[in-house]
Length: 220
Image (tube, rainbow, N blue to C red; front, side):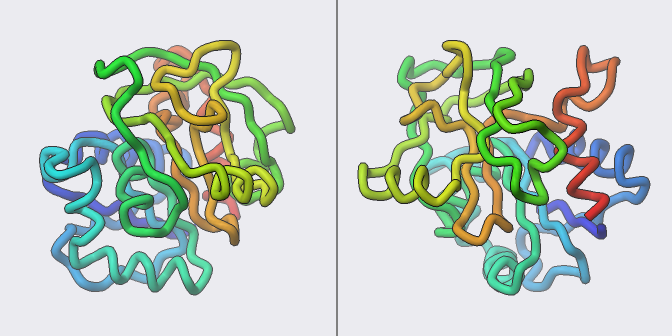
């Protein structure tokens, strides 16, 4: 699977994502600048973590209106896979590619620690490397990771199998509704998640729980 990583001013996890995609996929991803208006011929588009545009206005709000996002929307509508991690998740919600919003953590503090996730839906190209209900470890590092949606949207997300990952074993770091850590769009080709699976892919990282997401996705 050919991939691309979109980089914004303030991205700081782009190198981690590039390293993970290269190490597991065997081929470096294309690097796309936010002011570009076209994407290369790729199957997977990744928006990495960081603080795009310094998180002014709202996290991800300015990045969601960058020129490249029109091309991302178009590719997603045609079935390309899109994944946003941390700030990338915020960008995807602000761009309307995923339901809900990411608000300030309930503690009003930046949180950087390891959490546990329950894999909720394994019937997708992103998550089929895990077992249903599997508990995995993943690091988080964010200030605005509190997932919120109104009750009608939350019910639709739950009923539609759109919850990808849920914080488990009382490790919710931000107050997210329903302990939601990651969601899909309705077609399940767009995924956003706050934790950083790219930072737990080899023993040197202290574990490999994030590796299955990339292995199955890049092998598709």
